[in-house]
Image (cartoon, rainbow, N blue to C red):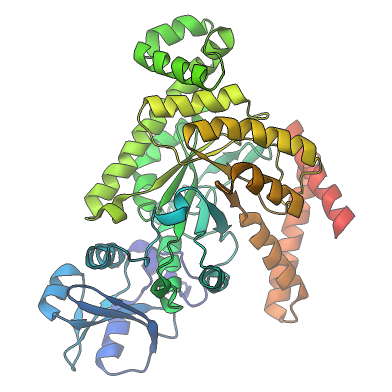
Amino acid sequence: MSKINAFLLQNELRIAQNPCVSPDFCLDWPTLSARLVAGAIVKRHDLSEVQTALGSFVLLEDSTGDHAWLFHGEQGAAQSALLDGVPLPNGDAVFPASWHNLLRLKNLIQKHDPQSTVFPSASGTLAHSSLGVGARFTTLHWPAVEWAMAELGLSMTANQNSIPRELVYDVDVMLEGKLEGVPFPFIGCDVPEGHQGQSVEGMSHGSVLSKLKTGFHQRKIAWGFNADHQPIGGKFDAREAELVRGCLLASYITFDLSPELAATEKRTDPAAWCAANVPAEVVTRVRARLTQVGLSGEGSAFDELLAYVWPAILKLQKRDRLYAQARREAFSTQLGQSYFRELSIDELPGLTTRETLATMLALCEALDIRIHYVAPAFGFQKNFPFDDNVELERRINDAWGICKAFGVSIGFHSGSGKSAENYQLCGRITGSRLEIKTSGRYTYEMGRALSASSNGVDQRLWQDWYKFTRTLATTSAFSDNEQERGMARRFIEHALELE
């Protein structure tokens, strides 16, 4: 038994009440398998049935939230393909819903059906258009998201979380009490790693099982999982293996260069540094690409930018190769190995200029890193509408001219709470080749639901959450950090005006 599963059982933290902490969706397989062999009554999720070349699998679930796969078909082959199988008296078999079995099932399912949508995938319209739906506070909204996708016939990035900022990247490190803080330039301070308490593998696992239980996979609508703000460089160099391993089911990786850029010192002679460290053929390709989009790749500003970002771009290339290698080793189909890439530059100081945007995309292109989405900084604030639509139109037009030339869609981060006019501008200018990330809205709506609930447990949770938020806001409003202080005061003023 894994250390995290033993810990959860010892502290009576079962999946039914606390899902997605462990990578596994069965904490106590000896007990569940014994009950199944004895004929115990458990919930059978009939809509979850999936076919493979070996036979069919259906999800079973007991009252604690432990899950099993009920298999009917070639028993010998299934026992070889999956782990810890137990035969049933009727000739079928059951297997624990473990993380390792989920990965093996992905190969079986996608090899049997190349159009399968059981798992998140880099396919369909998701290559250029999506809505990012986060699960920062709860997974309870997943069935509603699946219903919306099914009714609209619309693909979405139906699971989106920042890692390791929101999700735990390694549960063993969490148990050892060694999680650290993560820089959050957006508000000018650090936030605790994995502050949601769930693991990235657990959330990946749970999002797949949710879509099976509702039968969403039968609609054949592609959906995505975005491992958002994957930190590149800085202290995260030492954790690359764990970050790559945890994000194995992500169909969409967002590369966040800010840790490495924050650790990069300004060059005293940028031109000389670039001449010594950046291959001449890369510089030539980048300059040629800038010329094609009507910009200049000459002068001190270009040298300074290139010297600043080149170490981060090299580390992005290395991380990308590790993600690709991990998928080749784990998955046997092209569908299983593919993933989209987003370049995040929205959390760097200031607004993103056309020159910076084009240079970053040209560098990735020169290194054969296929970027599908890029997130410039437009000045968006979470849960605030952008008041000046004329200025917003100018900013998006500037960025879209560059992105269109590179065949890249725009990722609008901090997309929650914008006005209808804001969203319409984004869609009209880009021709809907965009993704809008809306995670913050779901956290807000969860707060509204809790505050209005008559349930005593809900009210205690709401009061505890509200007290924590108020303390955090008032403390940050008097912070020595100017950015943190300013952002906190804006949030407070906004709440007082509208609530």
